[in-house]
Length: 448
Figure 1 (cartoon, helix red, strand yellow):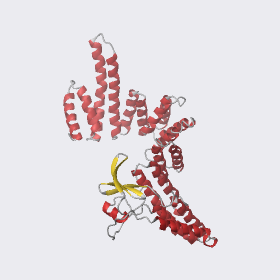
Figure 2 (figure 1 turned 180 degrees about the horizontal axis):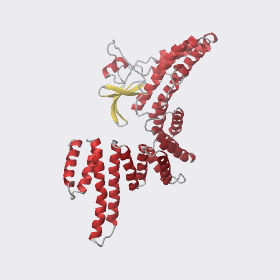
Figure 3 (figure 1 turned 45 degrees about the horizontal axis):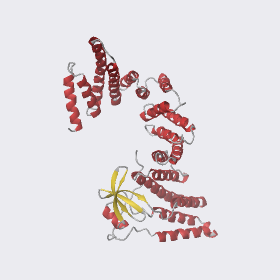
Figure 4 (figure 1 turned 135 degrees about the vertical axis):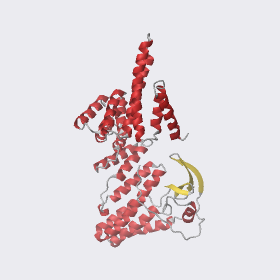
């Protein structure tokens, strides 16, 4: 997933190394917040835009105070100089990655190879300070339009903070926190004062991350669906169309609460496959849904849908690709072969077209091989005839894989497939030589 890097941080340090605990003067910051609360309670001060601008600034300071002295890539020596000595240092694994965990009063910093990799905020100065800051800035703007540039600057700082929170929470495998960070950044940047129309990327990330979090927190499916719906309403779609796959999961994750979500999940996938017919995730989701849930429909309906689209657009590589993958799920390898022959014909430079064509010839050969292994033969001639028919299928896989190899000469998967088929056909003319050639190339590609 591409990262939204919206913050550039730098540190210039002239101080002697510190030994005290993390330097967050909570009492001083809270004092400023209390003064701001008193100011807006005063009728005269409440009427001034400057009062609200100041409120935005002090609440922004409260929001960023726990992490303002930390940035990704920071050397640990510099971390000690700015944040002080940690209360403790331990070991922790996040999303399969091992880190040193440096524990401070307000934040736990995760260190990898002597540098800050990410962090999690463990204590706030004031819960919800960022949102109070946003409200204050917008109040100031409503009172004095001349404050627009200053408001925009303050709002941008807050958006940067929330986007950074999304990045660091994602790296720390705190998916719900990451989603909220990106969502808050999106909401701030979408405000008219910012002057730029958002494309839906941030809210899409929020939905994607809520989908990931849904496995452990089912309520995240509800929020994820809303975020993804909002992204689609903004005409956002990722390059591969996975937004529809994640929306399917968010709907399907709510099926126990309401069975109507099963059909909603189907509709999400159908909308996705219409626009992204080669998306394997969507196809597999549809096949899973059609074969496990009663009343969803007949898998052949999917075939009819794709064939109907092909009737309108017979030269669509994506449609033929999706059709081939669909028949693969149905284990109709002959139709898969037929589809990928068209893919290879329409786009001969596409590696995947030739590779899948070879793969489906192989699977068709395996399928027929299983048939003859289960038959009881009374004649050697009958067995030999059936075996030759199977080997004829395998032979057709060889040139397809060889064409794929021309396009991607070091493909381990293609070399492995070629050596396996050539070894099976080793008694045929030239096949043992091909096996030796592709086996050596496979070993070289694997670094053996």
